[in-house]
Length: 271
Length: 265
Image (tube, rainbow over all chains, first blue to last red; front, top):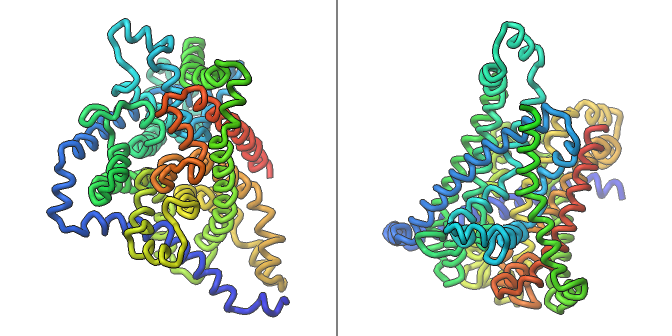
């Protein structure tokens, strides 16, 4: 038995199986999308992309994802700060709750927001009487994106806060710097790489989000139809080439963000 | 000042996470316990939960096996040049950047009935898209980076010295793996398994596109929730969502536990 197991062929068999699996599962499908969107020629690609519903959905996605990311960078930095610097009742519970949006199915997340803010709910009816419309409008999409991307900034900033040398802070105070000045000059620069890379991760996730958004957005073309829902609609109506054309815009965007994150992290490691 | 920030943090958590969770619970029980039970014992709900369970089991097994091997190859192998390794390493993260809907679309394009490969499988009587295999492939695609990314840093940290010592002393590949490598990566692998289970349980976009969401056939728990919401059957949606949320919270607790074990060992 052992001599059979030790045969060289096994090792090469394993190696090629794993690499083949990887290429078939990850690389081939990606190339397939790029290939498919250009399969009918460049002009067809331009035509699918220049459809106003298509490019408006991409622009809307970008706009809302930027808003959601900015909200998350602010809230996330604050929460990371509070969770790491202060000790108070319930801190460790809150710290584990941070990951809940990762663990929760996104469709359940969407349903939660729908229940909380939807028509007939307490907050929904207050907002409606004030003339606001939340669910099935853009605010709901932003809320869904914020919920889904909530952990990213916190988890990126926390390790950086732990690494800060307390003597730097003490030195700054000893030399008479005020609290807000210490925050700006000592803490903010050390947290910045985490805020940037966490923010970019959150941004790329917000661009890609589907499950939570499809339930709360009204999906009205041009106003509340975001790119991933648009792609889904195109697939459902059997227009695969159109779906692929919009997909590669989104994909190219996300890949460049991923590449930027790698650059930021590499620079952070070198310094 | 400090009190003010802590209160603000509590408010964010309560508004963003705790109230929505309670809302799912109260929504599921809004017609009492029997309303919750009735929507769960609908045949389509039972079927959907079973399909989800099956997808989770299959995906977790395959992903664990290939993820651990990929991580070992990416960190340890001498038969790949350094450049190829770092190139493959950057490819591992791609599924993170891909919208789940696009992930589903890729599989439909590649293996759908109109494609070359899909047509071939269709001819030999094996359906991939709009059937169980397609759903597994879609979920595998989405969950691929999780295991690799958990195991790789641990392998890098422990270094190759002990393994080299073991093979110098005459241990064979398998023995080295089980006696030396496995004990140091086991908690990372477990953490990766929990993450994979959570992600494949909750996968929605990719599965929705690939499965076609056919009731009592390819419907999973998350796509059932979606369909119930679309049909304005809110109590049923809540009941299934509550089950999913409860499992997620259980997984979250397990994540915390393994994280602590990982830190200790």
